[in-house]
Image (cartoon, rainbow, N blue to C red; front, side, top):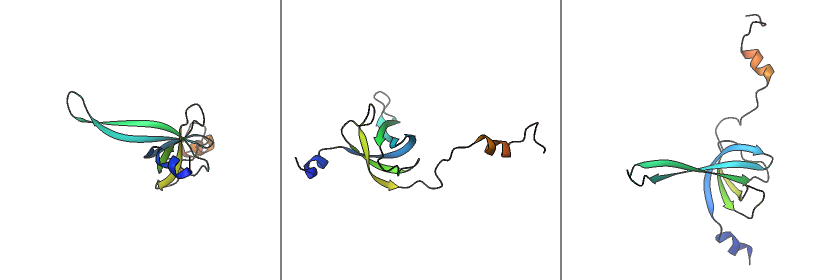
Length: 111
């Protein structure tokens, strides 16, 4: 089977990166709307998929396109095909205790 034939038979979805859980791993949230079966009001739903990010390019908030693939790990069944939009602002950075201590006054620090 050629590469072209394989690409066309796989699903592709667009979603937002909500978590960078580990090295080369991300969580992608795919929002969608469905009508309630009884009341017919439109209800917001979401699917959260684990995807493989080979180059660690995606950051939280980026809009990405993912494609179905063979199982890569226990949960990962998708991989990133393209980053459609980058998130505005800087990526999330871990906060250390020193950063918090510099901003928040305590009994031990002078005002």
